[in-house]
Length: 140
Ligand SMILES: [Zn+2]
Image 1 (spheres, rainbow, N blue to C red):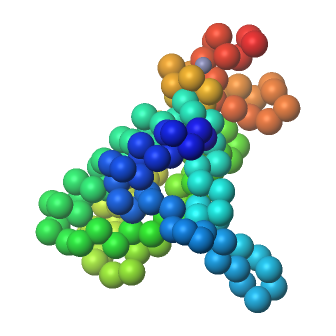
Image 2: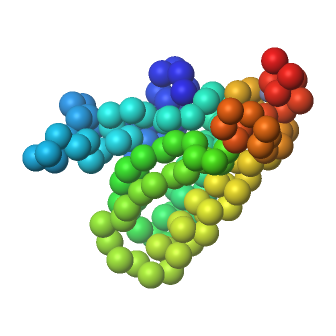
């Protein structure tokens, strides 16, 4: 995703800010903060999808009167849909479930949003790899 869009997400949602320096590494050289290292590993068309997801998460915290403690681990595309990996530091059962439901809902929704341009799309399974695309982007 474009830096410009990632910045807009970070401005709207503090938990989307990328920590600098981001490349926290394990002793074996494996990067553990994949979001910090690579940002949103998906195309620009899912910007609105991510914005909606982050907005609902923020609302859920407000509703429960809890401080936002979500840490984003990785955001990427897999088998044509969005994957949003995260962890929470507190163990508030209801809020935890609610956030999990929100993430699953938006991950599913991403299958109907063109990853390239954000228009209505469908999963195309006859490409080199599965991708959610609108007709126009699919034909390109
Ligand atoms: Zn498209």
